[in-house]
Image (cartoon, rainbow, N blue to C red; front, top):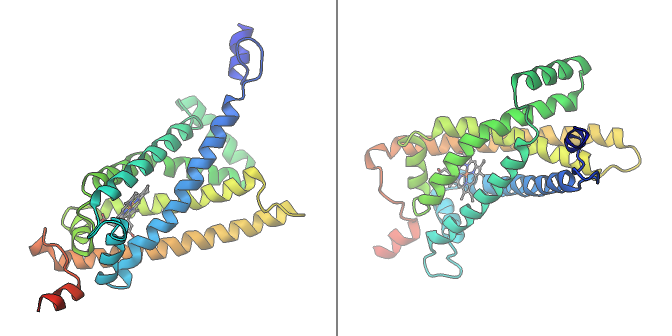
Length: 254
Ligand code: HEM
């Protein structure tokens, strides 16, 4: 019996302290940090549509490796998405350890959160909820992009958003990702003491301001891009499947 209890408090059954929970936390931070930074890059690429259709087309070709292979290859994108997908699954699996696993645990957590009125504990609650949402929505998006990597571009993406009904999913995913990612980065800074300086409490306040600013920035950028994809998708609805031809190629053909 005592072996069993010790097992629960992080010791192995032979009485030694186990380092595994700490190692898993470390991997969770590493994968979460990677995904959050990746999402900043991702939102920048997605919002290339705000500049022009031509610009988004060339960004897509660049990601297909047009600088190495003539004309680029969508396979490069599929391989990259697969790697991101694996990291996403590892991160989600490690996050799952922290979620309440039955109604009683959920009640205790809720009562505790309410009683201590601690902002960072509330943030943890939002992160757990948005993480749960992403299990489903993130997986759908990653699988579709991985298996349809040849269909990324000004018209193909806009058709997916509008004619293939991805926009409702993207609205929910965008909200979940942006809150989850910035809260996650904030928590990383607090957990590992980055930027602590001489006055960790003052740093915490400043970090929280930066966190909200980043959430606001990426939500604005993301929704602006989504509106543009929806508009292009509506205008292109009767030509679904037609690929975008950049202006320079039309000029060459003339
Ligand atoms: C390598 C992996 C990924 C690639 C190549 C990729 C690619 C894309 C592309 C091309 C779009 C534009 C719409 C479309 O074509 O359907 C898009 C939108 C979006 N992606 Fe990803 N994505 C990746 C990973 C992720 C991940 C991990 C998440 C979050 C879990 C995510 C969240 C979103 C959201 C929220 C949108 C809508 C953004 C907006 O319209 O403003 N993506 N993605």
